[in-house]
Amino acid sequence: MSGRKNAGKASPFLLLLISVGCFFATYNFLTMVGHGRSRDAGPRKILGGVGGVGGGGSDPSKRFHVALTATDALYSQWQSRVMYYWYREMRDRPGSDMGGFTRILHSGKPDGLMDEIPTLVVDPLPEGADRGYIVLNRPWAFVQWLKKSNIKEDYVLMAEPDHIFVRPLPNLAHGDEPAAFPFFYIKPTENEKILRKFFPEENGPVSKIDPIGNSPVIIKKAQLEKIAPTWMNISLKMKEDVETDKAFGWVLEMYAYAVASALHGVHYSLRKDFMIQPPWDAKSDNTFIIHYTYGCDYTLKGELTYGKIGEWRFDKRSYLRSPPPRNLTLPPPGVPESVATLVKMVNEATANIPGWDEER
Ligand SMILES: *[C@@H]1O[C@H](CO)[C@@H](O)[C@H](O)[C@H]1NC(C)=O
Ligand SMILES: *[C@@H]1O[C@H](CO)[C@@H](O)[C@H](O)[C@H]1NC(C)=O
Image (cartoon, rainbow, N blue to C red; front, side):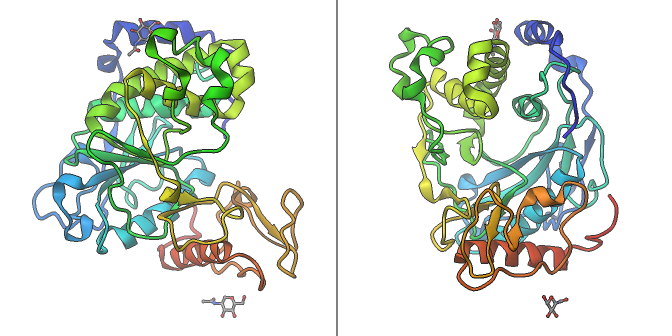
């Protein structure tokens, strides 16, 4: 992660830009679309991400575009490569409603993966505006992408680099009711006092705010177009408010998304089966995505040593400066199936991605 720590003098400036609403024209969008496994015969729409029939023959009106926000840091790159590999594996299987794919690269310039992953380069926030909280770039990245892209799907999946598709993903949204994963640590009703600053009484009870973040979410593009600018506005306002910043910390941008959705009257279908998070979820047979955000540490007897480095471990944070090597050692017996599946899937991806170990 970059060390953009300086306090944000640029933020009021940015809010002004947003409220004026003409800032889109002032930003340049450098667009590059790589060559995915496209089955489109015709010329590719430059801003539509990769083509591909997708959906394993499913109803085209249900298909969703997979939008992955990422940076050019090596740490984000290797995860994005694994994520994209499994998207391509699952996209055309029966049961999938997966359509095209775009990596929204919010580092402002192309990186070494442009030919491997279909990518749209967007601008990061102005220096200092994120106040050292780099994920504030995510709403801004979506705002830019939605303005500039012309994807053909009506729906969007917002995904992250540390997501692995374990099954073909159907469209879990039902028309205007989008689908989201409920996070146990997002507790709107326990934070009423703070949330009222952003969700005034006239909007109704704070229980209207769903316990979600922006990812994973499958939502109609038309709904996201309304929510994204508000989400960006609210994240910046929350970040500026000392009390809110302190209360929400690293999940501030998730609360901002939840509040922005509620302000637009959008209610989500909460899908616990959307994803699992090893090591806390032991089985991967009833889910669609493995989210490997937590470290998995075990003794050689298969006992979890969470928070303490295990004799066997898989933790994405072990690979900040170089990607995981091919053929990682599988966990010892007794470790939950989900953890073994995760490592096998990482190994399968790294074995099959050409030039895995090469510098990007
Ligand atoms: C963003 O915030 C500004 C300043 O508070 C406001 O004027 C503007 O309407 C907001 N825009 C959106 C899309 O919420
Ligand atoms: C992977 O590593 C194991 C030992 O951990 C070894 O037995 C196996 O041959 C390796 N596979 C490949 C494809 O290199």
